[in-house]
Amino acid sequence: MRESYFQREWMESWMKQRPGSHVVKIPDMPRGNKSSAETRFNPVKPYDIYAWDDGVFYAMELKLHTTFSAFPFVKVTENQINHLLAVEKNNGIGAVVINYRTNKVSKKATNEWGILPPFNMTYVMRGSTFSALDHNTPSASLSIHDLFHDEVIIPIKWMSANKIWDLTPLFVAIKKGW
Image (cartoon, rainbow, N blue to C red; front, side):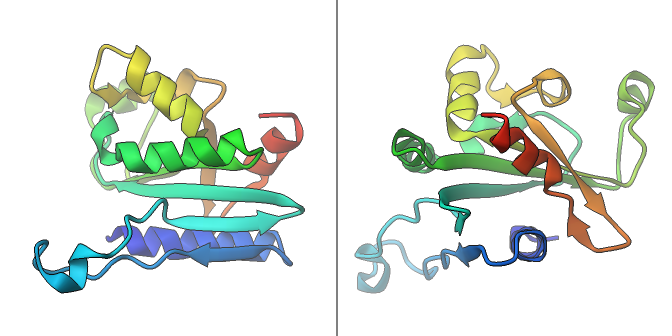
């Protein structure tokens, strides 16, 4: 599974549930020799997807995590966090969106949280929340416990029958001032 598949699912889900919104994936920069002229002058990508919906600007950095384990903070770069924080500073919504997708779940996860394979859940948090957790957590990773118990992290479920992510909890939280 590649992150690009998750990005496509997320965009399709957004457009189906929020018709009339404008959703754009920022293209990845060409890969090649980092010192070559063709890549040297490429701008750094600020985030994966942006959207306008009902007068609100959204910037989203999407990550795919294929193990049921803590999510390393370093997977979201300082540059990406800074761009998400800039969006929030300007009254937009900057978010880190992490999709946990795995067929292997430990016995501890099953016993402690009732998680059974295959596991496919997405968690959304503001860039400022992710940054605060990164700077205030002694660990180098976002724990599974934080995902399940932090009220500012919104769980989003995959609806297999419709093949879309149910974004309702995200938009309900935004209306309530999340």
